[in-house]
Length: 308
Ligand code: UDP
Ligand code: MG
Image: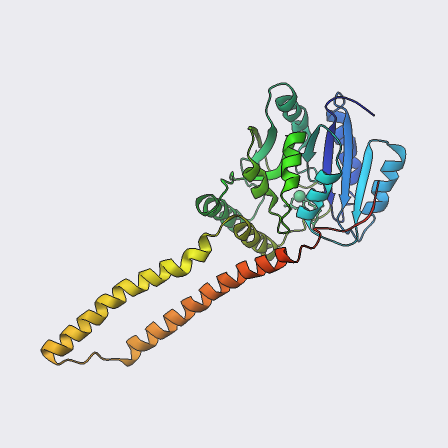
Protein backbone atom coordinates (compact mmCIF):
# COMPACT_ATOMS: atom_id res chain seq x y z
CA UNK A 1 0.00 0.00 0.00
CA UNK A 2 2.27 2.79 -1.23
CA UNK A 3 -0.07 5.55 -2.26
CA UNK A 4 0.93 9.17 -2.25
CA UNK A 5 -0.49 11.43 0.47
CA UNK A 6 -2.19 8.64 2.36
CA UNK A 7 -4.47 9.94 5.10
CA UNK A 8 -4.22 8.26 8.52
CA UNK A 9 -7.47 8.59 10.45
CA UNK A 10 -6.65 8.38 14.16
CA UNK A 11 -9.58 7.44 16.37
CA UNK A 12 -9.46 7.13 20.18
CA UNK A 13 -12.19 4.79 21.43
CA UNK A 14 -13.39 4.09 24.93
CA UNK A 15 -16.46 1.85 25.11
CA UNK A 16 -17.66 2.68 21.62
CA UNK A 17 -18.65 -0.68 20.13
CA UNK A 18 -21.87 0.77 18.75
CA UNK A 19 -20.16 3.55 16.74
CA UNK A 20 -17.14 1.97 15.08
CA UNK A 21 -18.65 0.25 12.08
CA UNK A 22 -20.77 3.23 11.11
CA UNK A 23 -17.75 5.51 11.53
CA UNK A 24 -15.63 3.52 9.07
CA UNK A 25 -18.52 3.36 6.62
CA UNK A 26 -19.16 7.11 6.66
CA UNK A 27 -15.52 8.11 6.46
CA UNK A 28 -14.87 5.68 3.60
CA UNK A 29 -17.87 7.04 1.78
CA UNK A 30 -16.93 10.74 1.95
CA UNK A 31 -13.25 9.97 1.30
CA UNK A 32 -13.67 7.62 -1.62
CA UNK A 33 -10.99 9.45 -3.61
CA UNK A 34 -8.48 9.62 -0.76
CA UNK A 35 -6.13 6.73 0.13
CA UNK A 36 -6.93 5.90 3.77
CA UNK A 37 -5.52 4.17 6.79
CA UNK A 38 -7.53 3.82 10.02
CA UNK A 39 -5.66 3.75 13.33
CA UNK A 40 -8.06 2.86 16.12
CA UNK A 41 -6.83 3.23 19.68
CA UNK A 42 -8.79 1.11 22.10
CA UNK A 43 -8.35 3.02 25.35
CA UNK A 44 -9.02 0.18 27.79
CA UNK A 45 -12.63 -0.34 26.76
CA UNK A 46 -14.69 -2.72 28.85
CA UNK A 47 -17.24 -3.49 26.13
CA UNK A 48 -16.76 -5.16 22.72
CA UNK A 49 -14.82 -2.26 21.18
CA UNK A 50 -11.66 -4.27 20.51
CA UNK A 51 -13.65 -7.20 19.11
CA UNK A 52 -15.43 -4.81 16.78
CA UNK A 53 -12.13 -3.24 15.64
CA UNK A 54 -10.52 -6.64 15.04
CA UNK A 55 -13.52 -7.78 13.03
CA UNK A 56 -13.06 -4.77 10.75
CA UNK A 57 -9.28 -5.21 10.59
CA UNK A 58 -9.68 -8.81 9.42
CA UNK A 59 -11.71 -7.85 6.39
CA UNK A 60 -10.08 -4.50 5.62
CA UNK A 61 -6.33 -4.05 5.17
CA UNK A 62 -6.62 -0.30 5.82
CA UNK A 63 -7.65 -0.82 9.45
CA UNK A 64 -4.94 -0.96 12.11
CA UNK A 65 -5.19 -0.63 15.87
CA UNK A 66 -3.44 -0.19 19.19
CA UNK A 67 -5.07 -1.62 22.29
CA UNK A 68 -4.12 -0.30 25.74
CA UNK A 69 -3.60 -2.45 28.82
CA UNK A 70 -6.09 -0.22 30.67
CA UNK A 71 -7.78 3.18 30.31
CA UNK A 72 -5.09 5.85 29.95
CA UNK A 73 -7.34 8.69 28.76
CA UNK A 74 -7.98 10.37 25.43
CA UNK A 75 -4.75 12.38 25.44
CA UNK A 76 -2.69 9.19 25.72
CA UNK A 77 -4.80 7.58 23.00
CA UNK A 78 -4.14 10.50 20.65
CA UNK A 79 -0.41 10.17 21.27
CA UNK A 80 -0.49 6.42 20.55
CA UNK A 81 -2.39 7.07 17.32
CA UNK A 82 0.11 9.68 16.16
CA UNK A 83 2.98 7.35 16.99
CA UNK A 84 1.53 4.42 15.10
CA UNK A 85 0.17 6.13 11.98
CA UNK A 86 2.16 5.84 8.76
CA UNK A 87 0.36 8.25 6.42
CA UNK A 88 1.85 11.41 4.93
CA UNK A 89 -1.11 13.22 6.46
CA UNK A 90 -2.92 12.42 9.71
CA UNK A 91 -6.23 13.47 11.19
CA UNK A 92 -7.51 12.92 14.74
CA UNK A 93 -11.25 12.39 15.13
CA UNK A 94 -13.86 11.24 17.65
CA UNK A 95 -15.58 8.00 16.75
CA UNK A 96 -19.07 9.23 17.70
CA UNK A 97 -19.40 11.27 14.45
CA UNK A 98 -19.50 14.54 16.40
CA UNK A 99 -16.54 15.47 14.24
CA UNK A 100 -18.31 15.40 10.90
CA UNK A 101 -16.49 13.36 8.25
CA UNK A 102 -18.02 15.61 5.57
CA UNK A 103 -15.28 18.15 6.35
CA UNK A 104 -12.46 15.70 5.56
CA UNK A 105 -12.18 16.24 1.78
CA UNK A 106 -11.98 20.02 2.25
CA UNK A 107 -9.38 19.72 4.99
CA UNK A 108 -7.37 17.32 2.86
CA UNK A 109 -7.55 19.71 -0.04
CA UNK A 110 -6.32 22.60 2.15
CA UNK A 111 -3.18 20.63 2.96
CA UNK A 112 -2.49 18.92 -0.36
CA UNK A 113 -3.47 21.72 -2.75
CA UNK A 114 -3.51 24.99 -0.79
CA UNK A 115 -0.22 24.44 1.00
CA UNK A 116 -1.42 24.62 4.63
CA UNK A 117 0.36 22.52 7.27
CA UNK A 118 -2.75 21.92 9.34
CA UNK A 119 -6.49 22.06 8.91
CA UNK A 120 -8.49 22.33 12.10
CA UNK A 121 -12.13 22.58 13.06
CA UNK A 122 -13.67 24.93 15.59
CA UNK A 123 -17.19 24.97 16.87
CA UNK A 124 -19.20 28.06 16.19
CA UNK A 125 -21.92 27.33 18.69
CA UNK A 126 -22.39 25.25 21.79
CA UNK A 127 -25.94 24.18 21.09
CA UNK A 128 -27.26 21.26 23.09
CA UNK A 129 -24.80 21.89 25.92
CA UNK A 130 -25.89 23.03 29.39
CA UNK A 131 -25.56 26.84 29.61
CA UNK A 132 -23.39 26.68 32.73
CA UNK A 133 -20.96 24.32 30.98
CA UNK A 134 -20.68 26.67 27.98
CA UNK A 135 -20.05 29.59 30.31
CA UNK A 136 -17.20 27.79 32.07
CA UNK A 137 -15.77 26.61 28.76
CA UNK A 138 -15.69 30.19 27.42
CA UNK A 139 -14.04 31.49 30.60
CA UNK A 140 -11.49 28.70 30.36
CA UNK A 141 -10.51 29.68 26.81
CA UNK A 142 -10.19 33.36 27.64
CA UNK A 143 -8.17 32.72 30.84
CA UNK A 144 -5.89 30.32 28.98
CA UNK A 145 -5.29 32.75 26.16
CA UNK A 146 -4.43 35.56 28.55
CA UNK A 147 -2.20 33.79 30.98
CA UNK A 148 -0.48 31.03 29.04
CA UNK A 149 2.14 30.44 26.36
CA UNK A 150 -0.52 29.46 23.86
CA UNK A 151 -3.41 31.27 22.26
CA UNK A 152 -6.19 28.72 22.45
CA UNK A 153 -8.88 29.26 19.85
CA UNK A 154 -12.32 29.32 21.48
CA UNK A 155 -14.23 26.21 20.48
CA UNK A 156 -11.22 24.44 18.99
CA UNK A 157 -11.76 20.70 18.92
CA UNK A 158 -9.47 17.71 18.77
CA UNK A 159 -10.50 17.44 15.10
CA UNK A 160 -7.35 18.36 13.25
CA UNK A 161 -5.54 17.26 10.14
CA UNK A 162 -1.81 17.74 9.81
CA UNK A 163 1.18 17.02 7.63
CA UNK A 164 3.81 14.44 8.60
CA UNK A 165 6.22 17.23 9.56
CA UNK A 166 3.76 18.56 12.15
CA UNK A 167 3.13 15.05 13.52
CA UNK A 168 6.87 14.54 13.93
CA UNK A 169 7.24 17.82 15.81
CA UNK A 170 4.31 16.95 18.12
CA UNK A 171 5.93 13.59 18.87
CA UNK A 172 9.06 15.38 20.07
CA UNK A 173 7.12 16.77 23.04
CA UNK A 174 7.54 14.03 25.60
CA UNK A 175 5.60 15.48 28.53
CA UNK A 176 3.40 13.11 30.51
CA UNK A 177 0.73 15.73 31.25
CA UNK A 178 -0.48 16.02 27.68
CA UNK A 179 -2.94 18.80 26.97
CA UNK A 180 -3.34 18.14 23.27
CA UNK A 181 -5.20 21.33 22.36
CA UNK A 182 -2.37 23.35 23.85
CA UNK A 183 0.28 21.20 22.17
CA UNK A 184 -1.29 21.69 18.74
CA UNK A 185 -1.26 25.43 19.30
CA UNK A 186 2.23 25.46 20.76
CA UNK A 187 3.92 23.76 17.80
CA UNK A 188 2.45 26.43 15.53
CA UNK A 189 2.50 26.00 11.72
CA UNK A 190 0.16 27.43 9.13
CA UNK A 191 -3.35 26.38 10.02
CA UNK A 192 -6.58 26.81 8.12
CA UNK A 193 -9.64 26.92 10.39
CA UNK A 194 -12.95 25.37 9.42
CA UNK A 195 -16.22 26.19 11.11
CA UNK A 196 -18.17 23.20 12.34
CA UNK A 197 -21.47 22.96 14.14
CA UNK A 198 -22.06 21.05 17.32
CA UNK A 199 -23.31 17.66 16.12
CA UNK A 200 -25.12 15.19 18.36
CA UNK A 201 -23.41 11.94 19.27
CA UNK A 202 -24.74 9.08 17.05
CA UNK A 203 -24.89 6.54 19.85
CA UNK A 204 -23.30 5.63 23.17
CA UNK A 205 -22.74 8.23 25.89
CA UNK A 206 -20.24 10.97 26.65
CA UNK A 207 -17.32 10.12 28.91
CA UNK A 208 -17.07 13.62 30.33
CA UNK A 209 -18.57 14.70 33.63
CA UNK A 210 -18.46 18.27 34.90
CA UNK A 211 -15.80 17.32 37.47
CA UNK A 212 -13.84 15.60 34.70
CA UNK A 213 -13.89 18.78 32.63
CA UNK A 214 -12.83 20.89 35.61
CA UNK A 215 -9.84 18.61 36.22
CA UNK A 216 -9.04 18.77 32.51
CA UNK A 217 -8.98 22.58 32.67
CA UNK A 218 -6.63 22.56 35.65
CA UNK A 219 -4.30 20.16 33.80
CA UNK A 220 -4.38 22.46 30.80
CA UNK A 221 -3.50 25.53 32.83
CA UNK A 222 -0.70 23.75 34.70
CA UNK A 223 0.69 22.39 31.42
CA UNK A 224 0.85 25.73 29.63
CA UNK A 225 0.97 28.52 32.18
CA UNK A 226 2.96 29.46 35.24
CA UNK A 227 0.90 32.58 35.93
CA UNK A 228 -0.88 31.08 38.98
CA UNK A 229 2.52 30.73 40.66
CA UNK A 230 2.84 34.50 40.63
CA UNK A 231 -0.43 34.86 42.51
CA UNK A 232 1.34 34.79 45.89
CA UNK A 233 3.49 37.79 44.96
CA UNK A 234 0.55 39.73 43.56
CA UNK A 235 -1.64 39.07 46.60
CA UNK A 236 1.26 39.78 48.92
CA UNK A 237 1.82 43.19 47.35
CA UNK A 238 -1.91 43.87 47.31
CA UNK A 239 -2.14 43.34 51.08
CA UNK A 240 1.21 44.75 52.17
CA UNK A 241 0.85 48.21 50.68
CA UNK A 242 -2.50 49.17 52.29
CA UNK A 243 -1.52 47.43 55.53
CA UNK A 244 1.63 49.52 55.76
CA UNK A 245 -0.47 52.65 55.27
CA UNK A 246 -2.82 51.48 58.01
CA UNK A 247 0.06 50.91 60.47
CA UNK A 248 1.34 54.42 59.85
CA UNK A 249 -2.18 55.76 60.49
CA UNK A 250 -2.54 53.83 63.80
CA UNK A 251 0.86 54.93 65.06
CA UNK A 252 0.07 58.51 64.10
CA UNK A 253 -3.28 58.46 65.95
CA UNK A 254 -1.67 56.93 69.04
CA UNK A 255 1.27 59.36 69.11
CA UNK A 256 -0.73 62.55 68.59
CA UNK A 257 -4.14 61.77 70.05
CA UNK A 258 -3.37 58.91 72.43
CA UNK A 259 -6.08 56.76 70.78
CA UNK A 260 -5.72 52.99 70.76
CA UNK A 261 -7.27 51.08 67.78
CA UNK A 262 -10.20 48.82 68.73
CA UNK A 263 -9.09 45.35 68.00
CA UNK A 264 -10.79 42.02 68.03
CA UNK A 265 -13.08 41.97 64.95
CA UNK A 266 -10.62 43.67 62.61
CA UNK A 267 -7.82 41.43 63.84
CA UNK A 268 -9.91 38.31 63.34
CA UNK A 269 -10.84 39.31 59.79
CA UNK A 270 -7.25 40.00 58.87
CA UNK A 271 -5.97 36.73 60.36
CA UNK A 272 -8.63 34.57 58.70
CA UNK A 273 -8.39 36.31 55.37
CA UNK A 274 -4.62 36.06 55.22
CA UNK A 275 -4.63 32.48 56.50
CA UNK A 276 -7.10 31.52 53.78
CA UNK A 277 -5.08 33.19 51.08
CA UNK A 278 -1.90 31.50 52.24
CA UNK A 279 -3.55 28.09 52.11
CA UNK A 280 -4.89 28.87 48.64
CA UNK A 281 -1.45 29.81 47.37
CA UNK A 282 0.14 26.74 49.00
CA UNK A 283 -2.47 24.66 47.20
CA UNK A 284 -1.45 26.19 43.87
CA UNK A 285 2.21 25.52 44.63
CA UNK A 286 1.26 21.96 45.50
CA UNK A 287 -0.48 21.48 42.17
CA UNK A 288 2.64 22.47 40.28
CA UNK A 289 4.91 20.39 42.49
CA UNK A 290 2.65 17.41 41.85
CA UNK A 291 3.11 18.11 38.15
CA UNK A 292 6.91 18.13 38.50
CA UNK A 293 6.77 14.95 40.56
CA UNK A 294 4.69 13.15 37.95
CA UNK A 295 6.93 14.27 35.08
CA UNK A 296 10.10 13.35 36.95
CA UNK A 297 9.04 9.71 37.22
CA UNK A 298 9.25 9.43 33.44
CA UNK A 299 6.60 6.78 33.21
CA UNK A 300 5.37 5.91 29.73
CA UNK A 301 2.19 7.78 28.77
CA UNK A 302 0.44 4.51 27.86
CA UNK A 303 1.07 0.77 27.69
CA UNK A 304 -0.03 -1.09 24.58
CA UNK A 305 -1.27 -4.63 25.12
CA UNK A 306 -1.44 -5.44 21.44
CA UNK A 307 -1.31 -3.69 18.11
CA UNK A 308 -1.49 -4.36 14.42
N1 UDP B 1 -12.20 8.70 24.69
C1 UDP B 1 -11.05 7.95 24.93
N2 UDP B 1 -10.65 7.74 26.21
C2 UDP B 1 -11.33 8.22 27.30
C3 UDP B 1 -12.48 9.01 27.04
C4 UDP B 1 -12.88 9.23 25.73
O1 UDP B 1 -10.41 7.49 23.98
O2 UDP B 1 -10.91 7.98 28.42
C5 UDP B 1 -12.66 8.93 23.29
C6 UDP B 1 -14.10 8.55 23.02
O3 UDP B 1 -14.23 7.20 22.70
C7 UDP B 1 -14.45 9.44 21.83
C8 UDP B 1 -13.62 10.70 22.11
O4 UDP B 1 -12.60 10.30 23.02
O5 UDP B 1 -14.05 8.90 20.59
C9 UDP B 1 -14.46 11.84 22.70
O6 UDP B 1 -15.15 11.39 23.85
P1 UDP B 1 -16.65 11.80 24.16
O7 UDP B 1 -17.46 11.71 22.91
O8 UDP B 1 -17.08 10.99 25.31
O9 UDP B 1 -16.47 13.31 24.58
P2 UDP B 1 -17.41 14.55 24.16
O10 UDP B 1 -17.61 14.48 22.68
O11 UDP B 1 -18.68 14.37 24.92
O12 UDP B 1 -16.62 15.76 24.58
MG1 MG C 1 -18.30 13.02 21.63
